[in-house]
Every structure is written in C-alpha cells, then in structure tokens.
Amino acid sequence: MYRLLLSLLVFPLPILSHSLSSLADQYLLTSPSHNSDLSLSLSPPSESSASNPNNDYAAGRTKPFGLNTPFLPNPSHLLPEKTPFPINESTHYYRRFHNGSQGGAYRRSSCPAINALANRGYINRTGRNVTYAALAHAVREVWNFGDDNSMLVLAPTFALHNWPDSIDLDMFNDDVVQYAVNCPAAPTRNDRQTGRDNVHLNRTLYESLLAFSSDGGVTLSLEDMAEHHHLRHNQSRAETPGFVFGNQGALCCLAQYTNMVGVLGRFGKHGRTTLYVEDVETFYLDEDIPRGYERREAPYYSPESNALIDRMTHHVGYTIQRPFPEGDQDPGRDICPLVAKFQKDSCA
Image (cartoon, rainbow, N blue to C red; front, top):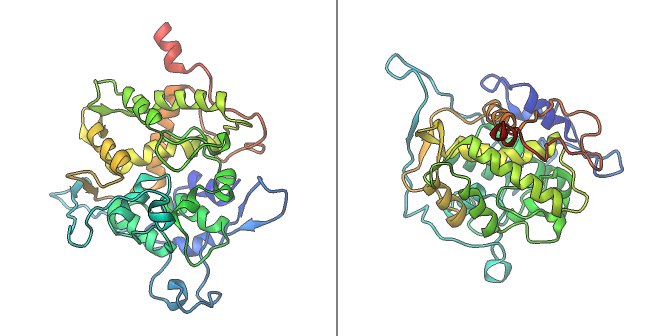
C-alpha cells in the first residue's frame, strides 16, 4: 500500500535542496484495499491542470509544499532547541468545537494537533473548506512539522478523495480514508471497523494511556507509551472484525505517539523526548496548544519519527520492515507479539 509512503519512510529526503512537490510527482500511491488498478498521486494538482480560479494552486497564491526553515547553527548556538511560541490571542483565541457542533456546521478530525489549529484559527475555525496549502502551512507554522511528514500524514486524505480544492476535517476519518490507510489500535480512538465513533476521544482509552506513566502521572516516556501501544494492539485484535496489523498499520499507529513526542516533547528526566502529562491533557482533552508551548527550532522530519518508532517497537519486541513486504495487508497479518518483550523480561 502506498508506494510513495514506503519510499519516504525508508529513504530520508534531501529536504533542503529539492521541492517535495516535484518529488511527489515521481511516485504513485496504489491502494490494495480496492480490486482495481486505480493509482492515486500524492502530489496536489498542478497549476496548469487546476481550472478553478478560486483554487489557491491555480491562482498561484500559495504553494502546496513549502520548505521548512532550516536550523542554522552558530558558535554560540550549536544544537537546535525549542523557543517560546507567542500566540496572538486577539487573532488566535481559543474556542473549542466538536465534530458536528451547531447542527453539523463545525467539523473536526480524530487528530488533536489538527483540531487545535482549527480551535485557534490557524485554519478555518469551522474545520470546513480547508485547502492542503492552508493545512500544510499551519502545521509548519505552529508545530514545525517537516514537509515530508506533512505529505505522509495529510496528503493521503486529499489523494484518496481525488485532490479536491478543499476538504472538511472529518474526511480524515471517513470510510474512504480509514479503510484504505488502515490505522488500527489508535491510542485514544476507537477502530472504525468496530462500528463505534472513531472521531471523538474515547475517555477510557485516554485514561488508560495516562495510567502507563511510570512516575505517577508526571511524564510519559517512549517506553511507557510502547507498553500502552502493546495493550491497545491486543485490545484491538480482540474486538475488531477482520483485524490486520501489518507493517503499515503498526507504523501508522505508532506515529500517533511519536509525532506527539516530536512536537510536544521537552527536556526532562527522559531526555529531549520527555512528554509531560499536563501537556498531554491540554492536547487531548482541550485540543489546544499547551500553555507555555515551545516550538522546535529544527523541523520534525520523518527520519526522526522513524527512530522513535523503532525504539518503541524494540521495547515491545518486533521490528517494522522497510520497505513493506508483499502481502503486508493480507487478512490475518499481525506483526506485533501478543506477549511483549518487556513482559518476558520482567518475568526473567
């Protein structure tokens, strides 16, 4: 599934010298969940092919993929840190809405990072008619999410809907996307295949995540979250019809933990990947930017996310194969052990 995804996840991109827009044109997405030869491009429509004069791409007002500002070291500042992120409260005031609020006028996704952008007005507050250019710019501006990660996380929803001018945020969770991208065992959301709401937070799953804090609810380490991930895998396996957990599903699931660490992690007892529970609470419960949030100086690119993912899978006791092998999404496929390495180690 998704040949472009595989290429981007396996081979680090020369971000500073090549445009992701042109790079994306060299690859195609193919979804094995459909018995057809339909291929979907992750690249947004070109200006020449976009006929709508109101389309940002056609009008040339914005570019669908922009390069993150690189961190440039100097003798007095050799390593990238985090810097305070000031929020203009007169423009980017916080106002919370849920998916379906006000008779369906407001739309939200299952991703608190995206919802926070809408709640703060960095994208359309209604969560409707959001262009790729606007969304990619907002995740760069607020979270300093790398352009390669934006392509991996954001572009498939647009691609699977045939690159419309804009989308509503709940389209990140509809049948077209969820059954094709296949992200089972999410940290705080139900699997769509169970027939339950997969957009809003499941409070029981959320509280389960916090319960894995090994220091009494102050922080979450990568190992804490790896153990929660293993629990969610076993829960999802037991309750989800047709459960499949190949390399792609594992990567998608784990990235929901590591992306949170990548943008919210602070220096602390677990090094620079220390995730403070107070920040997690604001992020998940309020779907807001945590108080005192500091933005990364260096963009959060996919190779860093992969390194964090591999650390988590090592703790559980499995390895993600890159590129994904043939048959990765075949029925019954499951690469995660029911009994984890950390459980065996604790019994030794």
